[in-house]
Image (cartoon, rainbow, N blue to C red):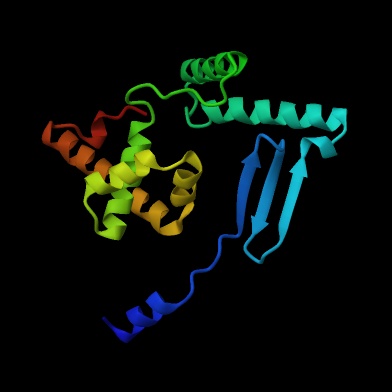
Length: 176
């Protein structure tokens, strides 16, 4: 092991900026900052108008998140929004995912982790599928993961280009 690697391995890990926890029993959210500061907010601390605004903001965010990635596909966006609205009306915060749903994102994340950690893709896939949504979100936000995913996407696009060229497709086929 090089001296630089040994030094990096011995350095203490920086704490997360903020760990957030929900407690349904306490009807509160708890914010634990990396510098040791702890803050909390419970629904009991809010007046009725603010409780309503918080609830409406949550509905707004939940439904908007459902169609955030559809890239202009109105049919898919409406379908996703309807599904979330129906799910909430039925009393479910999180619906069970259908088979194959969100698989490309899980596959990309697992491939990126596999590359960065030099572990088998199966091991990374198992870790990603078993991780919480918050943990997957945290991993996706990491700059090295973002870069690895971008590389994976670029490699996929390059392979598609080469396959298209092999079939005789060319830029001239694109009508502008």
